[in-house]
Length: 406
Image (cartoon, rainbow, N blue to C red; front, side, top):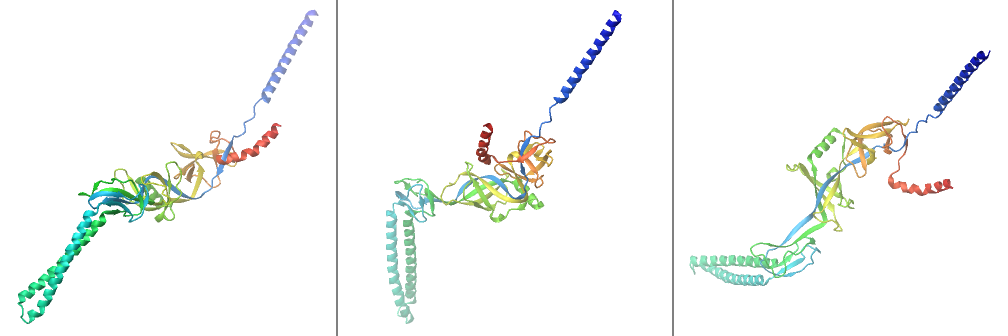
């Protein structure tokens, strides 16, 4: 009896142990099911809506400024420079006196020429009177025909001497005028290249100063011939349209500090040949400079609208990823799915990229949060706010955060 009892007790213990172990295992299994983490929500990304519209294709090219007119003031009369009549770096008018050269020799030459003219005129008077007297006498044979002919020849020679005398006087007056050097054009004059007391014009026209007209300037710039050929091909295929007013296209000038010059210029011409050394085509534009802010020789960047696209889409520059395989953007669909979209870009402008093809109107393009989104995943789109507008929203949110803390 005692042995049977011990056997039944041992069996009951095993059963209780097995049941307790099963309960423990069942409980562990239930706790594992309840602790499984939920799937994270899709990341929030800032998006902009693709809005097509007409856009100018701006080309930015390097260029240099050149004075509209340049005149080198030279000494055409030989002599000692006596006076400088202008302030270096000032504006001068056309015909304004600039220098005075010693004119005493030229005044003496003029006086001598005038005296020679007076003598020639006196000889002409005498010779003409004799010819007039001999003319009727020769008809009555009171004088020989030879004497009458000699009188007429002497009168004509005296008339020629008078003409030569007048020419000598005119030449002397011109040379005397060269002694007073004036500005050939209106503009800004630079430094004087000679000083008072210098001997100028001795054998050559000595440079005295340079006057430049800078109230308007030329902008000379170059464009690669390959770009011009691609542009012409795009225009011929209809992908691009010719910019309005191409014959007088407007240009913008960007200064070295990055600022845009206030006045716009106009394109004058495009060279018909390519420089064989550089493969560049030369273009020239005219630029107003009423305040004289710009100076000849200054390096600038020229923005030129050579064509336009009817359905271009401007995107913030950070929305476009440039890879060796091409340019792409990330687009968020209505269900939140993200996909990569290859795009074709046109010439950019500061901070923006121009999409010529690859996007449909109204599509949401990711601008902010690109590091959190990936193609094939999900994202929650919110309207993107440019950085310049972000600080304006900060004061409105500050009281709310303070209230929540309270």
